[in-house]
Image (tube, rainbow, N blue to C red; front, side, top):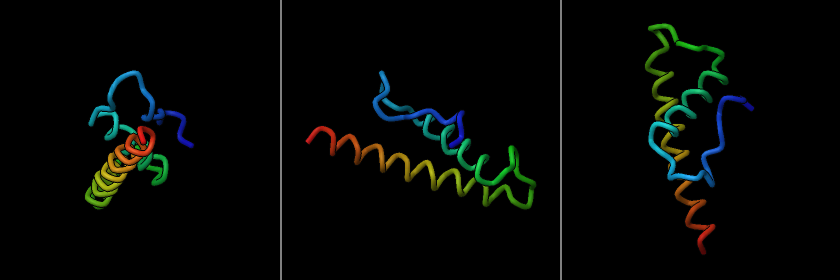
Length: 69
């Protein structure tokens, strides 16, 4: 687990888009092994961040729904 990724569920405030993007960025950095991708890999790097952020948003929305039921 990447230590700089903090849990986003059950925070004392609603999760922000910035927090989701930062967590996705940290995950992609950890998995890829790159802090910053080369020009040739920038598009793939950013696409991965966007996809992970979207999946994270969906998961958090579903977890909130399940927890309140």
